[in-house]
Length: 59
Picture 1 (tube, helix red, strand yellow):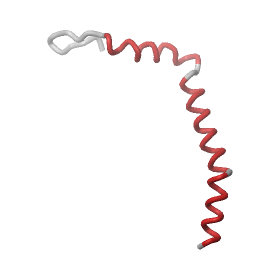
Picture 2 (picture 1 turned 30 degrees about the vertical axis):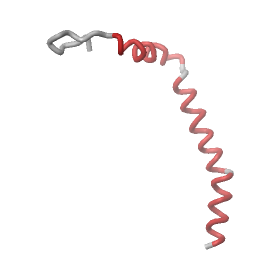
Picture 3 (picture 1 turned 90 degrees about the vertical axis):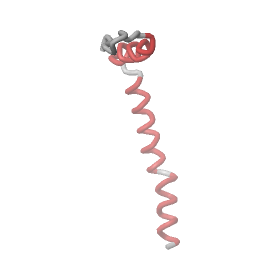
Picture 4 (picture 1 turned 180 degrees about the vertical axis):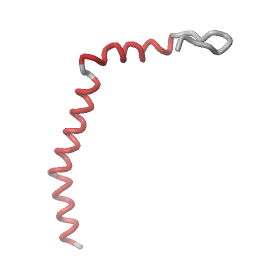
């Protein structure tokens, strides 16, 4: 049991940490990619769109 804990502890402290950092970096790069500017602007402005009284908005 002690050997399993030690192995998992070393794995979490090294390779898993590297994998999680890689995932974090990939998420940041995906969010700031050049093609996402229009999507972010649309999402930011979506709360200011008004809906028609009958429920049919400009979807």
